Image 1 (spheres, rainbow, N blue to C red):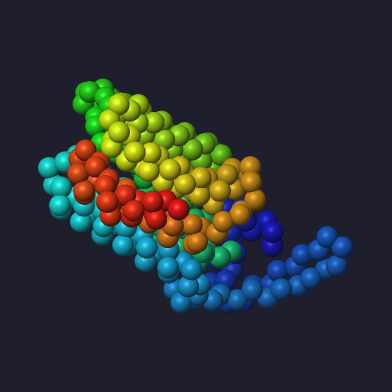
Image 2: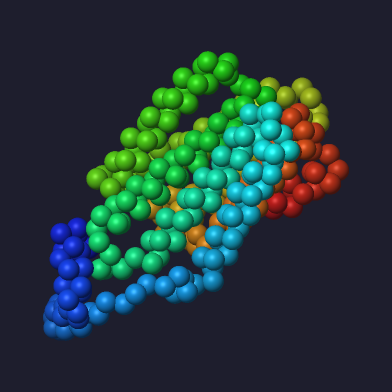
Length: 275
């Protein structure tokens, strides 16, 4: 039964279950022999716990908010990039939900396809988020240089995602962490550019804190546990709504003004989202 985690045995088990109940025999660590009857059981969406539906609902709201921000600022590249982030945020949640519905009898190729989709969407999300702060509030790079950098980074991200089923998640999650560090580096760069403008500096400080909270939360809930560097301390269905709220707070900055003048109620909302 434990060997059924490998692709050939998973395929064989799925074929056995198509003909009815399969019998599995295994020996426990204490030497006791056990026999299990494994029956095929349809998977239902209702089998998912409420926490996963809450996470999905928040990602839908995030995607809709991103599209709303784009509709309010259709001529600004930052708003378009923000909408793309929202779509990646929503679609990256779908493979995660499917993983929860998979079992031993799920064909290996289904797992591989879902893993590839998850890796590609997560890489796209991280890369588009880093791009946002390369162009917002002010462009850091010349457009030609940005396109070249995005092309190279996108190729690395795609190759990394496609290699996930072959080499495991270590490289994939390492690249994700590097992309989030680049995101934070771009935000620090933006802070340096606007350091002489008091309002601009205060606004970016709020963004720095909220983004840092988001990166730390995602690292604790997903990246570091998947890399084997940390036990799971925050459940993903709990962290996702908080992460979406942080995403929404950044969107308010995009909608409010291209110069990021977070004053009055705007600043209060950003502070509440960050803390």
